[in-house]
Image 1 (tube, rainbow, N blue to C red):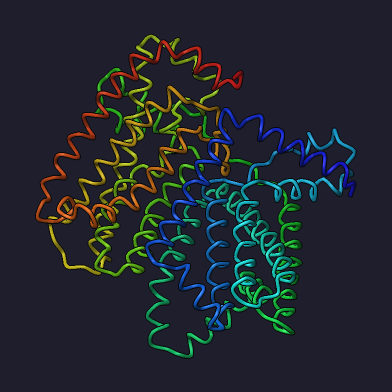
Image 2 (image 1 turned 120 degrees about the vertical axis):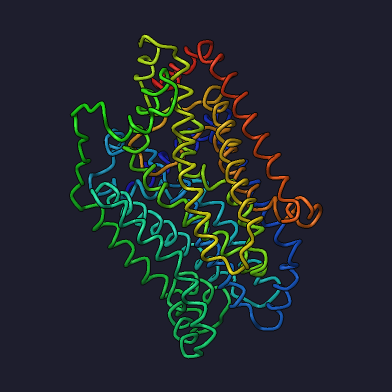
Length: 523
C-alpha cells in the first residue's frame, strides 16, 4: 500500500467533513457527542459509578471494571453504527478510488482504512483510552499493552459492525429477508429474559456463560489492559485471532456475488388494498394516501425498521426497568410508547420529499392541490405508525410483570397517540424547513438533516428519561389516579398536528424551489 496516498485520502475525508460542518455533519456530531456526554454525566452522578469504580480498581477488581466498560462501549458502538448509520458511510466509491494511484487489490483495504478513520470511531477510541489511563492511574495496569489492546478492540468493533451491516443488507434484499430478520431480532430480544432465570438457578450455567464471554474481544482487551504477565499477553493473542477471523470473513463477504434487487410489478391496480385503505380519507387526498402507502411499503429499510420498532422499544423498556426495579416497567413504558409509532416512519416523516428525487415536480403538474401530497404523506405515515400501538399495548399487558390496571392501559394508549401526532407535527416542519436529499434504496447510513436527527434522537432520549424525571419531581403527573391528564396531552398533540399541517400546507408553494433544489441534488 502507498502510505502517502492513503494519508492524502484521509486528509481529504476530514476536509470534506469540515466543509460540511456548517450545513449538517459537524452539528450532528456535536449534538450526538453532547448527548453521549450528558448521559454519561447523568449516569455517573446518579449511581456514583466513578467512585465505585475507583474502589473496585484499588481492591484488585480492575479486570471486572474493564470488562463491563469495554463490553458496554463495544455494544453501543455496534448499535449506533448499524441502527443510526454513524461511521458506516462510504466516502469514496470504487469508481472514485480509481482516480488515485491505488492498485485494484488495495482498494478494499483503502476503503476500510478511511472508514476506521471516521470521527465516530475516534470518539469511542478516546473513551476506551480513557479507561486504560484510569486503570493505570488508580492501579498498576500496564498502559502500553492496554493502549495496544484497545486499538485492536476498536478495529474488531469496526469490522464486526461492517460485516453485520453487509449481511443484513444482503438479507433484506431477498424476498423473505425482512421476516427472517424480524425472527432473528425477536430471538435476540427475548434471549435475556430466557437466560436470566437459568443464571439464577444454575451455577454451572453461570460458569459456562462466563467462560463463553471470556473469549469475546472486550474481555480480551480487558485482560490486556489490566493483567500482567501471561494473562495480559493471552488477551492480546485473543484479539489478534478475532481480527484474523473477522478479516477473513469480510473478504469472503465482499467477494459474494451481488443480489439483484427485486423488480416491482408494473401492473397497475386501481382496487388494491392500498386504495381500499385510502378510501377512508377525503376524495382529494385518497389517491395520494395510496401513493404514499406504496412508497413506504416498497422501501426495504422501512420494512426492516417497521419490524424492528416493537422489539427495540421492548428491549429498552425491559433493560431499563430491570436495572431500576421491575416496578418501574410502567414508568419506562409510558415514555417509550410515545416513540413506538414514530420509530419506523421517522426517516421519511421528517424528510417527506427527500426521497422522491425529480418526482417532486409531478405533485405540481397534477390537476389537484399540491398540498394534498403533503397532507396525504402525513396521513399515511400516521396510519402506519398507529398500527403498531395496539400490538405494543397487547404485548405489554401480556408480558409486563405488573398487575393489570385499566388506568395504566389507558395512559399507555394516550402516550402512544400523543407521541404519534406530536412527532409527526414536528416532522412536517422539518420536511419543509430543513430537507435533505436521501437515498430511497439505501439500507444503512444516517441521511437525515440536522433537525431531523434532533427530532429523532432527541425524541428517543426524551422518551427514555422524561418519565424518570417526572417520577422524581412531579410524580402526580404520571400516577394512575390522574389518568385523565392523558386526555389533555392527546388533545394538545392533535391540535398541534392540525395547526402544523394547515401551516405547512400553506407554506409548500413558497418553499417549492428550495425543496426542488434539495431533492434533485442541486443544493
